[in-house]
Image 1 (cartoon, helix red, strand yellow):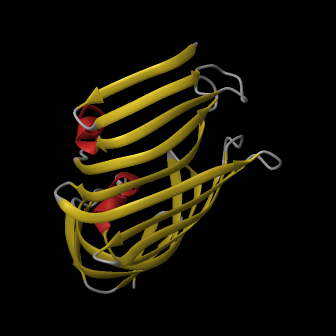
Image 2 (cartoon, one colour; image 1 turned 120 degrees about the vertical axis):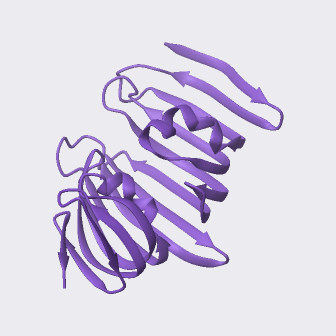
Length: 212
């Protein structure tokens, strides 16, 4: 499917789409955002329990959309609110190396001029298992950001966390390991149906929480 010069606009918001939708690895769909209101994604995010606010600008390139999609990106978003909690400003850069088929990734979130989150590493677009090789460093980050990744373990996350963690596995089944310092944090452990409040250090090994 060839998309040429498709545009959606609403006031100052613009989304431009151009390129090819196919199974071929070389075919790319270009998507450009200008002052895009993240709340527009409510139809996709609300069923996941996620409410987003903020403004998105930048470019996405989506390859092999109908078979094994992967993304190159150079986007930024300002004044992000996640479930009514201030997250800050985000910059995301991702680019594929055609010689290795690895997508290099760098994402930073800054709140009130402090970098609260940085994720760096690689994504293997062709690997069916263990496609992620990422490191995340957090400095007083809102833990609600990680609720989608930990939803099988915990829910209703409140508070902040400082941590150095590794993320492996796949985007749909990430494996998280590392040490976290929770600050006035609380959450419900789904298996126990019990709510915990933590202001202490916690280890996560293979997505299993180890209280110390």
